[in-house]
Length: 388
Image (cartoon, rainbow, N blue to C red):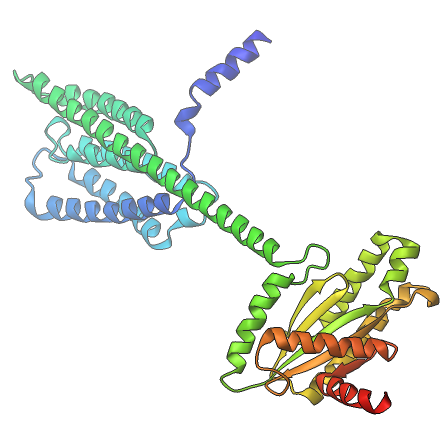
């Protein structure tokens, strides 16, 4: 048991060696940059080897073999971009190892301790630091230093300053690994901070929209509440004043009180929700519907005249009748609707609502489950003195 725990502890101690960066836009950009730089470095090395360097003392055939091998995997990586499709960054690991092996081999066959291509170690360790992290970069520089030390001492000329040259090269290699790795770590940290800030901002936006939506909606029916509805209705009226019609329907449920009294308010709330849903399904997308209060609803219909509003009111009344399928005959509900129209009945929203409300009470007076208009209301008031 203790052996197993010790093994797990050892694994966790060295787990950082195998940590891969998360897939982010920053990591994608780094992989793309390294892929392009790899091709540029291969091109420069090929031109230098072919035209500008004295290849005496170099194993030219092996050097060109190493160059060809890097071309063979460098071009497909740059063109096909497999790092954008693979689940984790196997591309980074594979190409990083391949680059390291190719660099060591290329330096070994182009002069070893005297190779003019020693700077490839600097580029390779910088690429590892850019792609992964400071710790991996320092580890890579240690591996490069050990490999180059072996190559160097296997081919050195026993000159007096050999140790000094080797020490400087390895020190600079470590400096580059630490410097670039530290900068990459800081940039990664900032990138993660930005990602976290953007994530929190997106969550805050969702919460804001959710709370804003909740503030606009009636909790029971899910329709617009009175304040939000009046704000939207005023907008529609302003648009209509540039040329158009607005029909306002004031709707009040019939006989809901009986359900509340006999079955309880929970049952009444369920019926109220069902009525609101049925009315909303009946309306057009551009129509507005809101809960005015209690069992009252207001509907605003842009570009609808009085005659069409009559037809729409009948459709709403019929839609509410469908709710009765789940109720007994003695608890059937209905809908009384009052209609007013801009610009004929009034010029402002409060007056339109008031006239529609009064027309609705006229519909109730006549037995409910029907619609009446502001015109019917005027006729009613005109007939009162004659009938008195």
